[in-house]
Amino acid sequence: MKEHVIDTSTKIELFDTTLRDGTQGEGINLSVEDKLRIAHRLDEFGIDIMEGGWPGSNPRDEEFFERAKAVDFPQARLCAFGSTARYPDAVETDPNLDALLKAETLVVSIFGKTWKFHSQVGLGLEDAENEDLIFKSVRFLNEQGRRVIFDAEHFFDGFKDDPEFAMAMIEAAAKGGANVIVLCDTNGGTLTSDVSAIMKAVRKKIDTPLGIHAHDDGGLAVANSLTAVQHGATHVQGTINGVGERCGNANLCTIIPDLLLKMKFRTMRDIDLSQLGSLSHFVYEVMNLIPDHRAPYVGKSAFAHKGGIHVSAVMKDSRMYEHITPETVGSEQRVLVSDLSGKSNVRYKVKEMGINLNGDEELVGRIVGRIKSLEHEGFQFDGAEASFELMLRSETGEFTPFFDVLDSRVHVRYDEDGHTAADAVLKVTVDGEIEHTAADGVGPVHALDNALRKALTRFYPEIAEVQLVDYKVRVLNEKHGTKSKVRVLIESSDEQSSWSTVGVSDNIIEATWQALSDSLNYKLFKSTRDEPSPEPGTQEGNRPETQGLTQN
Image (cartoon, rainbow, N blue to C red; front, top):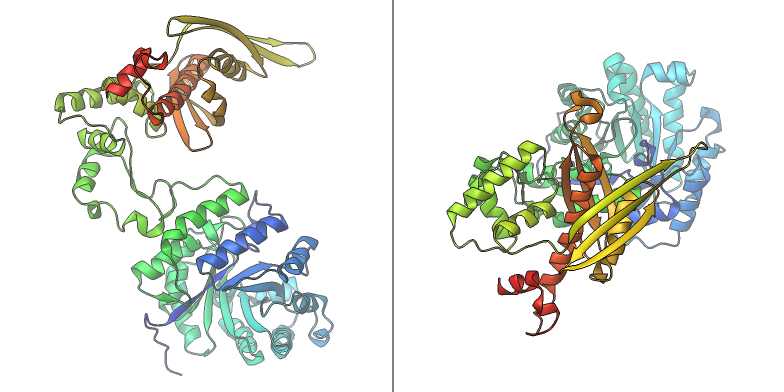
């Protein structure tokens, strides 16, 4: 048989196993409703086949497939997953295969052992028995009118151990009528060079369409998947964001743009890549996972620039440091500000914020100097852009604080039963008017936050919309022990947006106070700018800080 040569006009079938293999990842637990929501998004995006779960293994997946029968997925096909039958002479009555049929999906995927070690030790089968098991299981499902995808489990390890055995097993699947044979790097440790060599060997003997299912234990799942396509695979399996058992599965959020943009392949359905970032974030949200900011294409940092030389180049032509246009995959270009920044970073951020410096290079230089000085003290503005904007607008004269704290005290109490409590006392001034208040909380940060809100609500009722979303503390000079300086990063949000602020001190309460103060000041600053300019002579118009903002 001649070696198969694939060209880029061949369409690649995308098989998503986020709802099955992806849920085996640590910390992932999806309800039936969660799985249905994700399935709808996968269908809308352009996935060809969605593997919904293993109906024969647990009640949740049984319920998912039962509910999915009443759901219309206009484009994608739902697939039920299972194993070959347990015994070669009892295929027709096997409960696992029966569960696949009851799921009523037009596509089914079943796995079988193609590593002799697993067949003999795990199942206790002779070679001929395992071969017969695969053949009869695939044939049975095929005869029931199902499109059968055979997952050759541990194929690459099995081929390296005993190529004749591994080949015999997938040839049995082909004879049984498998529509696709998927070569699985189940342990995820195969090198890309081995994938290349083994794909070539298999392609010479198998006419059935081939697929690839790779895991990322060696950090090569995406590379191995793309290599398999280069050598004849027309079916690619993976998960959104690479979620999955151990180190995860091949990441479709990387594979899909690589296939379309870099390798110039086509997929079975037209895909709007500008929705890729949104899909990635949606799945993270439903799974309650922290997004990987450094993920290719869709990560928050994928098109972020920090070094001054890089930013200067990107401002001239982004192709100098960006391999694609970010918007192509639903991402955006970001410029960070740090002690590595130069004037180009500041110019970029100033333009992004809509600030006009009127070509004042002396002001730009002063801002750069202040950034470098503050970051030397421990501040980090690439993770706290709201604090950076306040600092920047303070330098330009557009911002003055909306309140000042004249005095503050925080008390923490412990009792012999292990109960803790805290209270904070604040004396705050707004436009010369003093507000003296106190509040308690479960801890000092909570008490301080409550007291500050209580003191300011009479003046600025809009701060009631602000919620604390995240709170992080990092020790900056660990060798000083409990005397070390700390950096506090706070993320806040309202109904429209979210923002991050920073504080640094050798006192964690002081650092927290700085970040909290910036957070509320940022909310008030944005709210004031969004409001229409007050009429002359009104109380609002007489505020010095408001007058300064309307003048600018």
